Length: 322
Ligand code: PBG
Image (tube, rainbow, N blue to C red; front, side, top):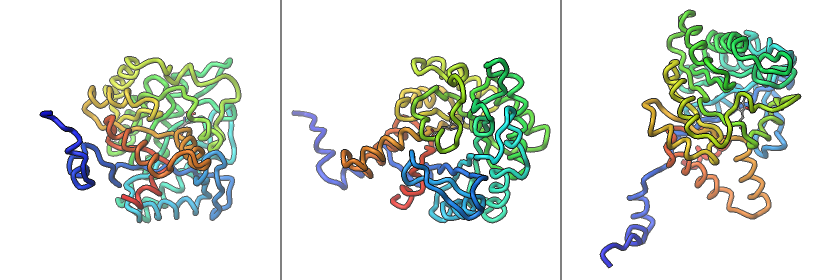
């Protein structure tokens, strides 16, 4: 035999030497749920995501500090408001939970922690859709105005990066223009360019109370069968001024991450979503898989597919082991 690939696997040292992909602390972004309905210092477990919590405002600030001290580079914030209405008015309230946490964390931590804010209406609307609804239809262009208002309010609070996750057409351009007109040229856009209509968001919707009250999100989020369309979405977002793009979910869409990486010149992230988290956690709880090994393997696969960074609910825990 001329070739014996097993020679490169014969010891831990040699395996470490030739490993093509590794996971580092610099790869991970931790999602944080800020719940305005909780007391300042309260945190409450999310039942569909064991190990994850919703935080009151002060508790969320402390959590960000703790995460930063662990060496994690970034958090992504999601808000659960007190009041929901058809127009997501509380989403761009300068005293909203997300805005308060951004201001406090940036004041306290400055550049030691990147603060990203998810820009979407669904957690703030009474109907649970990611846009303005009329006659059971989610209106695109009217929604852009609200998304821009939300992004601007986060920018005013001092956010580093806004992450539009709504999947309306033209939102990156609209948000870019609005930020620039208000002298926030340095706020970056991380767009969820290829976001699929996925069953894997179930636990998040429980966590964020954002389940649509009628219909589904298939008229705006992408169809699972499509990959060329993902490339189109990505190219559009690049042309509209996105600084980085996301593919979401991650595990069932590793091919999309790879395509995105091969066909763009901007950084590509993968969002390992709530359902991916719940699958591994629940199988591990039953004793059917080795939890930690499964987590590392899942995250490594997302990187191997081409992701430059990963949004994952395991960021805090795993960073302690990296
Ligand atoms: C908001 C948003 C969702 C997720 C991130 N941003 C929910 C959705 O689109 O229904 C899902 C994240 C997860 O499942 O972990 N639009």
